[in-house]
Image 1: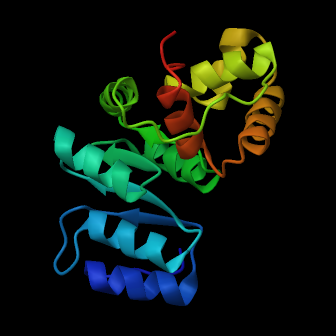
Image 2: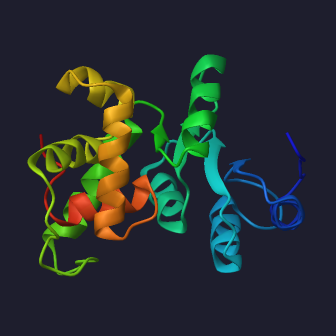
Length: 189
């Protein structure tokens, strides 16, 4: 831990000063909200990934946080082991959600993808069949460990496929990868 802050403005200041890998952030704070902090950090170009830890499981709060750039979203009722795993996943750029919230986010992105709000240029770059298969599973919210178990391949092989896909698609993290997959209709299993 490199620092704490009592409010949103302090969180932005502390992040600018310390440049942490992961910021664990509440949504409801004095000053700036969690979403506003995410937006400010993105505007500053900080590579800090944000894990929301809050009491609110409201659909709009979850969607607003993810749209603002949060990498993950946990409820405060999350147990210690799951919280620590989520922090580690966030540091690696993987999404983490309290069970049930990932489906909500995926559903919203599917809805957007079905409309005229396409975010990625066509055509889809050439991916191997295995890369597409891994991409589909990433879009459903599965972790690399779960994908490895489902496809009966190693965790490291999954990570290699994800990294190769990110490179081919010129994307930077799993959140962008999920958005791409959903825009292309790859989120259905």
